[in-house]
Amino acid sequence: MGLEIYHQKRDFRRTPEPKGKVSKANKHRFVCQEHHASSLHFDFRLEIGGVLKSWSLRKGPSLNPEIRRLAVPTEDHPVEYLEFQGHIPEGNYGAGEHMIWDSGTYKLLEGESAEEQFEKGKLKFELNGARLKGAFNFFRLGTRDQWLLVKGKDEYALADWKLELLMPDAEGNKFIEEEKKAARRSATRSPRGHAGKSNEPVTKISARAEKGEKLSSLDGVLKAENPEGDKRVKVGEYVLDLTSLDRVYWPESGFTKADLIRYYYEISEYILPYLENRPLIMKRYPMGIGGQSFHQHDVDEVPEFVRTIALEAEDEGIHTVDYIVCDNLQTHLYLANLGAIERHPWHSQTSNLEFPDWFVFDLDPGEEVEFETICEVAVSTRQVIDSLGLESYAKTSGSRGIHVYVPIKPEYAYDRVTDLSERIAKIVAGENPKVATVERSKSKRTKNQIYVDYLQNAYGKSVVAPYSVRPKAGAPVSAPLVWDEVEKKKISIKDFTIENMLERVGKKGDLFKAVLTDKQSLEEAFEKVKGKAKRAK
Ligand code: MN
Image (cartoon, rainbow, N blue to C red; front, top):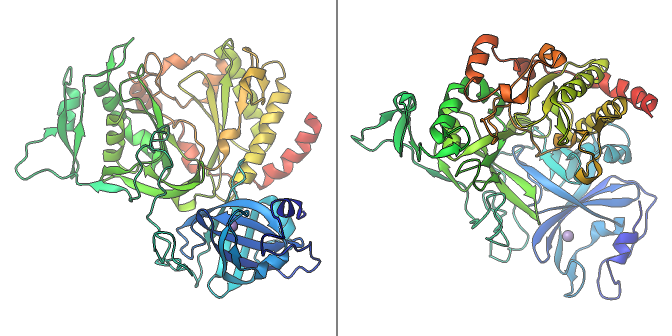
């Protein structure tokens, strides 16, 4: 810890900011500053280890426990900064009005050393300021250096709390508005579906039948031999538009959009439990698997039955992303109609977003790896996980690899789970040196190697859901497996498709069910993995 970066960034002949030095006092003070720089933000600083550990929060803290603020670390500041406010002149770093919005002290609610908790990326504290009071949880997220600040549920929590600015922002607003989206800098970037982003919250479109309107029945439409064109169907109390039903989505096998919708309808009771209550990332192929595709996180406009959740994300600055949460059959079918062939749910639920309730190893083979070898590495992964006292479950990715899931209690921050999964992946690679690797760079892997990808276990990341369809020839599906099938290597990816998956679940039931119910504690695994990692070296 030091102030080198702080000093480098500033010319103290030109800025009124304090030069300051590392202090010996450790009074557990905090400050939250309103900073009208090139863009308005709040600086949150905690006195830790003789300096002010600092984070930038675009919309400041919140006393509403439902609001999760993304906090991006900035350079350490001197403790003298606790009292700084004033105008930083043009041409200087952070030019603009800087004011103390709140200050006071904090008390750790877990652990004894703030430095230690900071290093672990998990701070639980109570703030004692004029505006900020009570318990807060503050976590580092997975592999990227971002934190989340969330108000704990106590007597100081306020569901309808709004942050009042000391000075109005450039548009004259006196409050930080929850529902506002950051305008995108460019309307032409579209990979995440941000194109033409407005400043508005998600628009909900009515999905009720017109008076006297005649609607088709969903079963009737999907049971027809060759469903064609557009149909308005009734699903429960809502109306759903199914469009271009005869569009060919899989040219080689001739499967159409209607086939995709029919599969998702028939499999809905099996797939929905893996999508419910989780932010969802869609991979859309509106013209079929040969056409353009894109990942979509954010939506602007949805039918009224679709639930969305607004979350902050960082991508060229912090902005709000409205994720779909696929909680009901209507939403599930609506997504199929959008050409969302792939469904990628988060590893954590909306009620507990900071804590994943499963983690995953994505065994991703190079071009020349035989499926039998993938099965062997999957079995080896299971054995390593088993030696830590944990059960794991396998499914085909539906593409070329196998996913191994470990269901866990939603009690461990992403950071710790990522760390554990990294250790496990390294042991697996160590035990299968010829065929497995944790090398991230594709160019450094050979065509005969399987990449043991543990990096999807960070906050905001995902893998394809069980029963999700993949945009590959033959319309394969990500299929839950019994370990016996993996051990005997009797299966292949192409065995499971939208044509036969329903029959399989009819016979075998949901082979992945334990992933939803068998939530395991990680305490033992955290201990055991340390010794193993040493031996593996
Ligand atoms: Mn600032």
